Amino acid sequence: MSEVCTDNRFEIIAKAKADLLESTNIETSADEMVCLDSFLLRCWQMGWLKKYEEDQRWIPITTRPMDEWERKEWSKKIGYELEDDDAVIYTSQLPDDGQECIVCSKWGNVFIDTFSNDPDYGCYFEDHGDMDGLTAWMPFPKPWRGEGDE
Image (tube, rainbow, N blue to C red; front, side):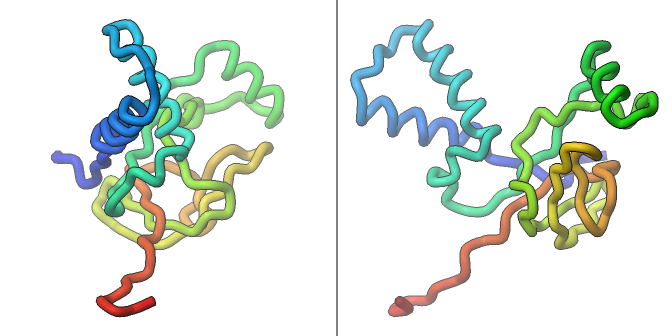
């Protein structure tokens, strides 16, 4: 099955990198570029590179399995043992808590929902519930402004 949703993280990171290199005296050695690329990826994951996004694109929802320590800590916090499917850490940029956004499922459904990052229950969308089957999200685009609109 082909991917339904994609993102443009590499384009955004490249724009941020070019901007940094043009406006600073950062050394352009191979080691510095590896460090800068890693830093900019983390900035993108935190949502700090939004000014480099020209158009709205899907942001994938990616996870990794919890390690043993993370699983034990979460299980203690919530009071029961996590199922394998629930024992994940989100590795991608997620919406802000309370942010209304557009969401895409692995079945190709697109809907509007509000994201919640609850310290006791984890991440979920209010209408959809858990994050199962969700593949990507995007913020609402800026309102359209025609020529001459102020």
